[in-house]
Image (cartoon, rainbow, N blue to C red; front, side, top):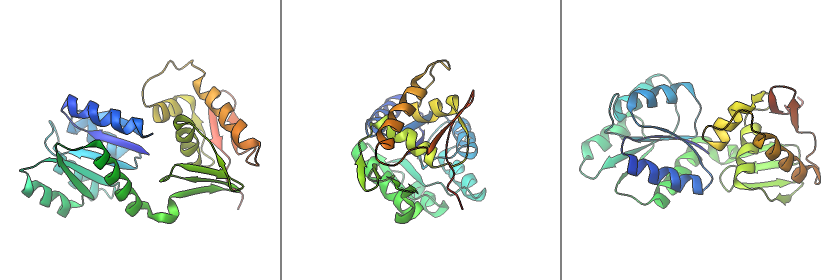
Length: 225
C-alpha cells in the first residue's frame, strides 16, 4: 500500500518509514503541513499518517481541508497523550483513527490495515484479471488458483500496474511509486523486475497481461468489456 507520512520529527519519521517499508509499504514523507497538504491533494494514497502538531498547515487544518474537498483517503492521526481535545476534534472532522505517541510500529501497521479494510471493503481488496488475482491485504497473488511467489518489490509493482488497467505508466512514475526514492532514470531495474514478474505468471496462464509501450513504460492490459 502507498502511505503518505506527514511528520516533522526526524526520529519518529525515520522509525515509521523503516518499519512500514520492512512490511512492503511504499512511503512518501513530508516534514511540514504545507507540502504534505499539496501531496495529499495531488496524488493518490491508500492512507495518510498525519501528525497534528506540524509546522505550516497543521494536521487538523489539513484534515478539514481534505474532507471539504471531498478527499476521503483514510487518515490516521498521530497525537501526544495529552491532546484529548485535538483527538476528539480530529475524529469529528473525519479522521479514521488515531494513535498516541509513543507507539509501536506494529500497532500502526495493524491500524493501517484496519482503516484500509473499512475504506475499500473486503471485495475491493481483491484486484483480478482473468485467472490472475491479487489480494492487497494478505499480499497474496494467485493465478489459476496457484500461488505466485513474488518478492515485496515485485508485488508492489504488479499491484501498481493492476490498479490502473489501460493506463501507461512511465518508468519514472514506477520508480517513484514502487521504489519510493529517486533512482537514475537510465537504470533498468524496472525492466528487470517486469521480466521476473512475467516469467512467474506466464508459466501458469497469466501471460500477455503486462504490455510494453516502447520508449515510455508499461501498462496492465485493460479487461475486455
